[in-house]
Amino acid sequence: MKTKILVVEDVPEMAELICMYLEKAEFEPLALDTAEKALEKLDEGYDPALIILDLNLPGMSGFDFLKTFRKNYKASVPVIIVSARDADEDIIAGLGFGADEFVTKPFSPKVLVARVQAKLSRLCATQASVEETIQFGPYTVFCNSCILKKGTEKIPLSTKEYAVLEYLVKNSSQPASPEQIFSAVWKNQFGDMTAVGVYVQRLRKKIEDNPANPKYIKTVFGMGYQLCMDSV
Image (cartoon, rainbow, N blue to C red; front, side):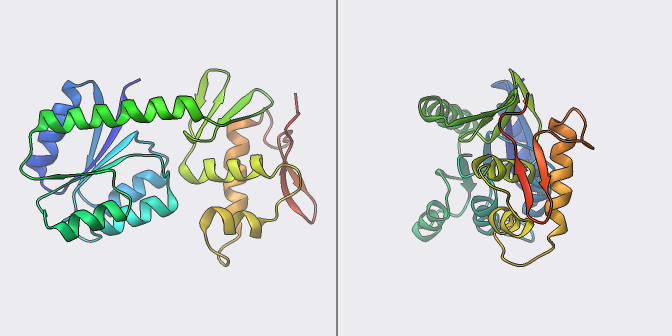
């Protein structure tokens, strides 16, 4: 399976050029022309290994996308800003909001791809040395990579599905109320708590043999949800 790269760039010719060079390097790029479309795709479960981000986008700016991404999605995914804005203030702001590199336009596509390859190589080496794993039943949660596997098979999860599962795994010693899960995953104290139940049902469909009679994600009456670590 090829490594996925998300390209958020509103100039079609630039997006096409970046994607062409990424494809030549055996990556699988996806180009989207707005930050809003990129966030929607991430919410659907799209899981890129790296993001190439322009700043001057229609609607939500690249800066706002970066802030939202770092707050609500994977902190470990590298982000390379590619922008015509080259003022020191813009570079400092981009790095401050969580970008890993800032590349100014015009640039060499070959050099950009080399930066992508180098960043991913270093990330893989780091993750391999510090990866935290938690097992339950036949499943393994890779906490640094935000991945769930059943044996060697990767189970596709959306960002929120993974976040709910990880919270239940790391707090399996006692039931967690919908309010606790919502606050931890959605980063809000108040909101639509029914969202928690929706995501629990989605997880059950993906990991339970019989979602109607779950053996891993249990409902504890009057208390919430609890993940049973030793079910076989």
